[in-house]
Image (cartoon, rainbow, N blue to C red; front, side, top):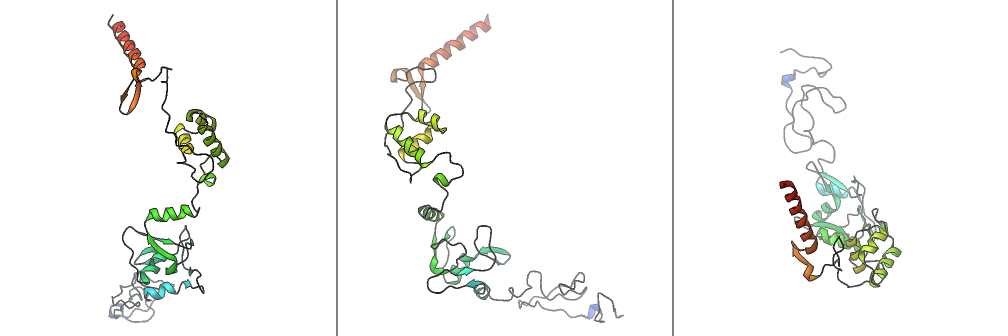
Length: 265
C-alpha cells in the first residue's frame, strides 16, 4: 500500500490505516469519514470527523441544565430572570433541544420539577416574555391566558384596534340614541356599521369598557317587509326561522302564473 502525501492527506499515513474515532461529544458513536477537506471545520478527506453532524460545539456536550442556566441573568430579590440567549419574533426566549426550538420559559418549569400537561400553556405573571423565573410562571389554558391579557389591557381593543372606525364618544352616543328609541338601522347608517353591531354596542356586548347607558331592550324585529307591507301575524309566516311576508309571496305566485300563461300562448 503506497503512502499518499498531498493536500488531502498531509499526515503521510495510508488512508485505509487511519483508525476510526468516536464522537467528541461523548455519545460513544463512531464518526464517519470526511467526504472532502474543510480546514475551517477541521475535516481531512478520508479521515474520521471529530463530531457527528449536529453533535459538535461546546453546548452539545453540556447537560441541559448547564446549557440553560448559563444563558440566564438572575436579578436579586423578586426581579425577573432574563434570558440572554436566542429570541423569537415575539420576544420569547428559545432553546434548541434535539433539533427543535423550545421556548425557554417552558424549559425553566420543567427543570424546576414541574410537569406541563399536554395542551396547556405557560403564562407570565410579570408580563415579560424574556423572563424565565419559575416563580413568575404559571400553567393554564389559552383561554386563561387571553382573559388575563384582556384584564391587564394588553390586547388591542376599543380605539387601539387597527380595524375600528368608532371612538369611545361615538359608543356613548350610540347607546344614548338607542335608549331614546332610535332604531339600530338608523344608527347603523349614520356610523357606517351593521345593524347587528349597533344593537350589540347598545346592549354592551361590544365595547364593554366604554361608558354610556346600556339597555336591555331585546332586538327589535322588523315591522315591515322590503316592499313596505306590515309584518302582522296575519300577514306573515315563519320559514327556516325567519318571517316571510304573505302578500309578497302571493304577488310572486301571481306573477309566475302570468308568465307561464303568456309563454303557453
